[in-house]
Length: 210
Length: 146
Image (cartoon, rainbow over the protein chains, first blue to last red):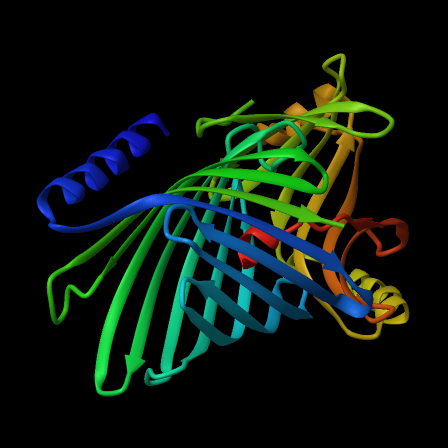
């Protein structure tokens, strides 16, 4: 595990040094989930980009369509200095448990609308890997390693872009309802058509369910 | 014991008791061996397929499960062996001789119960009689979805 973290840190450091367009900061989020009847669930996520005066608030409703499959749809608003963005979200998630780790596959689409701009349509795939650091499953008071790897295809007017995200995190299960995750969120985009855009965040996320 | 692959040890803290479980692979089959807190060998389980169960037991198990759930999806079947330490060790080592070992089938399945998808664990005797059933608490997957 230590080796994986060191390799990832070296990878990020190398990119931060060799690329010119670099943005970085702190990205905290709170993710609140409420279980409803008949496998319905409501999710509210608030995420801020500290130092950039930008806050996202998303509301998503999901329905289990199998023990390990979930279909969801939602709406996001982004408030930042002088702009207001709306986004519609649709997603399908498959989770699977293996001996000693879990995987999550998320296929999603979103449509973003902003005044004076072309609508942006994105098609995304995210693979999530969770490895308990003690035993086979994550119990209260135990830590875990989590890695997100996401590919975002973006279409805006005549333009196409691919963004790749790599998010290694260390998580901790505080109690049966709450989890805390802390780590890095690296986003690489514009490398197909223009100068590569690197965004490198320190992220902290709290999951609350009730 | 004949195992040569890596042994993984887990402690299971239940509401009533604490047990130790050792998991490994032997001849491409996943084995799980459970011990009591004071080291007594409780049972030996290994993964099997539906076809490893006799036709008569299959029919009996199907009848019970269909009555309980209508539609269901089997996720995992384990053959459970219970007996004395000596008999279980001899069985694992493939030694010849008489021994008294009770065989059960542990079945994990998915089903829709009262409008929600659930996971259940069933224990059947070798001839397909229901011994017990319990609901598996599903892990929260919020941090895999969002």
